[in-house]
Image (cartoon, rainbow, N blue to C red; front, top):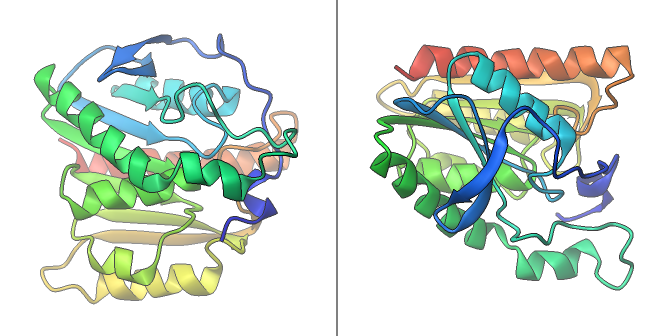
Length: 239
């Protein structure tokens, strides 16, 4: 499950990227964008962490739609580094499992609530998709978006009963279209009409929403379409 697809098109990290700022939240360095208000969006990164410029640009875009956006450093300054041959992804994941990310995210949510936030949505990219699913299963958030998620199983989706959007790629070994369609079947079969939105983007690969080349017009177009779907989902379900 932790193959090279998780690591393709690795970003050049930049601690100064974005229009927001970094401060501690629940003991985690977090990139914050937008003005604090009653609705917050938690963005959970892929394995490259919260200093990826594209991710921070997405955060700023979500903030511009009127949300308070939080992008925590769930890796404590230790994102995956594909240049470090002595520490392949399988080894890195032992230190940074999604279970640890989920527990840290719960602390972030408590901190947001203490600041007066009353509604929280979460979006997870790749590694972050599993973290967000765990938050959804615990009903700690009101709506979620999974963007080319990794490590998410059909059993995980069976435990989700909040409004959920899944944005998948046509070319994706981590969450192939067949699996994404199974997610859709599970969500649409739930009693009580759990609202869901499932979309498979043609001609794109795992990671396309956050690890795109900003100078590739087609890549940007596909990524921005996914970002708009995410914003639409939050606008529909977070009040």
